Amino acid sequence: RPLQRRAAAVMAPPEEILGIKPDGKYNVPAGVREKLGKNLLLNSKHPLGILWKTVQEYFAEQDSNCKFFDTEKPVVSTVDCFDKLRVPPDHVSRSPSDTYYVNADYVLRTHTSAHQCQFLSQYPEITSFLCAGDVYRRDEIDASHYPAFHQCEGVRLFDAQKVSKEEVMEDLKKTLEGLAAHLFQLKTGEDTMRWLDELLSHGVYVYFPFTEPSLELEIFYNEDWMEVLGCGVIHHDVLRNAGLDPEKVHGWAFGLGLERLAMVLFGIPDIRLFWSDDARFAQQFSEGSFSEKTKFKPFSKYPPVLKDISMWIPEDFVDNDLFEMIRDEGGGPGRSSKMFRVTWRDMSRTLTNEEVNAKHEKVLEHLTWNVVTSVAD
Ligand code: FA5
Ligand code: MG
Image 1 (cartoon, rainbow, N blue to C red):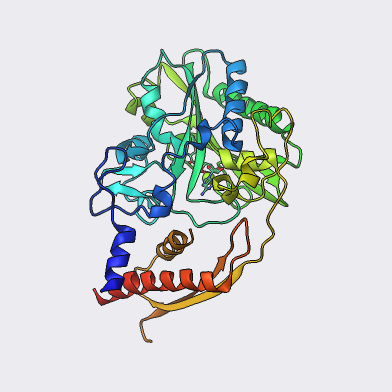
Image 2 (image 1 turned 135 degrees about the horizontal axis):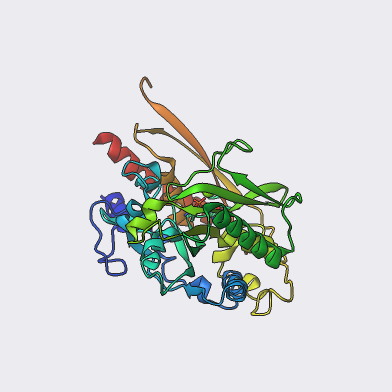
């Protein structure tokens, strides 16, 4: 009984999220919901706010008509987030194992492309724009992946009678190479930056349903290639979905991961640091950090405490279910089992075995309730 009440409290949906009422499809854990409204991009002293301002300055200089948006709500309809962008109804990226649903029709946006059509439809008042914001995905966490992160969408439109598709593509590459050069003094062809095209390259197939052709840009950082953006020529169906005539107007779009760029720019080794409340992180940055070429100085090397969990699992078990339970707490025949090693580490101090035991016990309680009851069902 006490177990049941505790599990219910963790998963209980709020009355509403940004005006949208949850239903049975609600799957936003408390740790993710907390991130809504943090507005890191609007903080001029936060690395993400500093980068966003620098990106805007570059685009304003390139194109005086470029419009900037950063206050769109992160809760969007599945129509805007997926349908208008030609993401098929059964695509895995929109399933509840990958996407946070508020209800059957509304999600936490999984990319800033969710706003493409609303701004495209304002052509010709708007011919080019950037739209930045917080986005959410049920991704596994590592040094360059986090379930809440930030993207910047960029779009530029051209007269289709005057500018060919090849010229649109050329302008796209030139613009993004120019941005990389402005931010990092990187040049293509060097071993620090490379384009991946649609065709099989480096074992990855680059494809987005909303661009044709599509490209990705990678930067070499921390001994490895890191993908920083996806882009391409906007698919004609997307233009039509925004009420445009592809015979008259076409253009390019890109979506870049702001954390990834900020990591390279400021030498930040781990994406989790962006959400840190620790003054030793925040105090290292100021409005002038871009021109001053500020580099992050690590402040924590505290040892982790390791705990193992192994269990029988129901057939429909998704690893993300367990990962989220852990994060919320930390902050026989025909049966399969799974074992997880949990690393409990605080960025700013050494954890004691007693306090980790208490947290670990709570995770196990939630797990027993959520997983074992679903087996019983
Ligand atoms: C997209 O989200 C597309 N909407 C981008 C796009 C826009 C393509 C317009 C074409 C036209 P993708 O899922 O690859 O694509 O994400 C874009 C970038 O977001 C990645 O390159 C990466 O830099 C960043 N990113 C993706 N997942 C995460 C994550 N979990 N944590 C941090 N950054 C991430
Ligand atoms: Mg990608």
